[in-house]
Length: 464
Image 1 (spheres, one colour):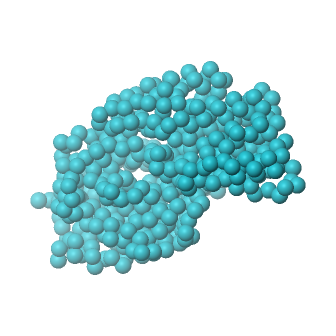
Image 2 (cartoon, rainbow, N blue to C red):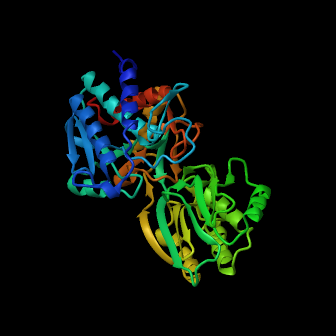
Image 3 (tube, rainbow, N blue to C red):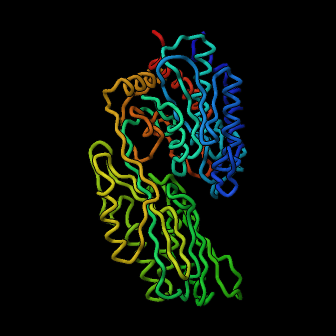
């Protein structure tokens, strides 16, 4: 039986497995961390569930102290497939419960369907198809299960200190055909205390993760007429998909508003509509104090100008990987303090300080403290390498589509390997739905991805 036919026969099992995994809410929860569950009980449950599935398939499995795990078959040198089972928080705007794994119009909807439970399990079922077909391998194939990919990679740092590092491999956590270059990632926190307590801005809070475009911003105000505020809000022009709503009663001392935008992955801020920035643009029309206006102007002028670092003067670009991107991912502003976090993806031919030093200079001039929360160097594997060419051939042979290699701003576990690239699961021309409401993976694509991964494993590891 041909391998693709064998995968077709596993269709219902693949769908059921992806649904079951999505239904485990594996969001980082440090508050409830414990031994064996360093990132919380939900992630622990998802890791143990996936390892148990691999063991049921007859593979060798290992749980590395709850930080990560792996599922392995074969002998010889190591080929790594690096997926992750943690997910970003669900956010608002879903048409179905975000952990229900509901099937709608041939798509599995749920947080993690595309990023990264669906493709991680596709890789596992690809391994199972090869094992069931008794195809001999010249390499060990190891599916590594990460648990902190969305929050800082503490999982992978721990895992690679304890376990052997694959020299080559791929991450099923981005786009097809092959991503051979990934921009550097820099998360910066800027914070300051106010000289005097703000008279009107009680709080402005939006965003949960640096690498997500905020789709909601909550605001509390005082010392401004309810009627005046309602009139200004009614007359303010928001772009399509963005809204501002009064949620307080007229006689309440503090007036509360909720602003809604459109979420997106932080590496693609142009694909979202940042609720925080739209809230600040509205707030800037209010009769605020000069210090309040100054804070809002700083944010709107610097992280709030453009999508490519224009406001901070770091609009860098290069030929291999394109433009720098900058996302304002978190804002916590109170009457006494301001803190915000930005996500920057810089081109592969630049270094961290090409970005950090200009921003630091602007921040210090305005008396903001600046801190590096996370940094990943840029990563690049030549297009002509055996790895890239083997994966391109697998993609082309299985799908019949044109193979090409390209660069992205997103960061994947491919950076953890000396020779690592990102490989699927999103096909060219498809909408970007990771980190968005109603994240989904089409069932047909899930099966096709499984076939591509099976062929990729054979191209790299088959004993022929």
